[in-house]
Length: 492
Ligand SMILES: [Zn+2]
Image (cartoon, rainbow, N blue to C red):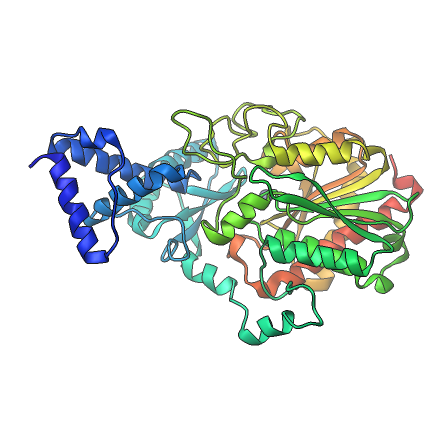
């Protein structure tokens, strides 16, 4: 039987069984004239599915074709776990593999390649990665043959993901849509861009004497990058707080919003040091990626720029926190990736992304007034300071940065019992072209990247009940830094 006829018959069968009409769109498919030819297309469709686990996504125009062939592939009884959609992660697990040496790391890299595994976090001694439900046995075998030990961090990623983000009840919906409230944001649920921006607008409207909201630019998909400014004393130093460079790190924007609420709505409770300062707060930098995590793929990290023309076209997104013009591409593929399909792809040139450009443009004119920056990420429970691009390279006030980090660590331990580690960013792993290195190099004295909860058990999918306790932990670092800014001996 000829290949085209095979595809045509499957198409008809699917239409009868599912009621969905599938189109054959690609002309070279029509050119197939053998069963072998048809099977090679099916295999190509399968590898597209695997590539998705590496962070790629096909252009909309070819999605129909890929979906069609992927379905045929499943009909052909070969498994392939789709990563997107709420049910795409059911039965998937997160594993941590530890290494003793460089040989172990190399062995894991080989396993990772064979599994097309999505890496969630890596350090010099271990890696957390997602294993699709259909790949569990293969992963076990590959690790065993490579003599690598692993432990399961999350035993059903899909189940935990859904449990972490419960929908609002009708009662809650009604409460937040009542006439008394102009915004829907809670600290009991995760929210989309619309709700987050509505809360910022509400604060600007209700606290207009010292709060304003503006857009500092637009993202690739033309979303407004809203920033809230709190001005307590125009002559006082400014403090920059950002979150969501990486889309899937949902506890980062909630922490920035928690801090925003404390600084505006609960101003009366603040210490003198906090009350004296001014703040720029941007809770969502990667708005396009963030919305994408809410609708399409919960574990998306980068922005949503399409890949470069050619074979990498299906790989969307640049890692915005590898795109800054500060030792961009330093260390080759160690500190960031030149491959558009990798999670830490740095872009085609420094500051290539609209989101990066907007931040740099805004901050450059205010850099002399800026005395602090805290950039929130998840997960790992770390308080990191520059430089990230190279080990044993620190700013002149390294000791002071470490001391202030330790103050925050101790107060967090007292407050919630969680243990945070304070260290130089590159000691975790080298990362080049990052925002904190850019600000440190520009002379901003207190610059930190804070990796919030947890230590890997649930990683990016912590329950919404952890929003407030995690927000408090982030606020402890802001407090410690504010105290340090107030001390003249602490300044550079
Ligand atoms: Zn991050």
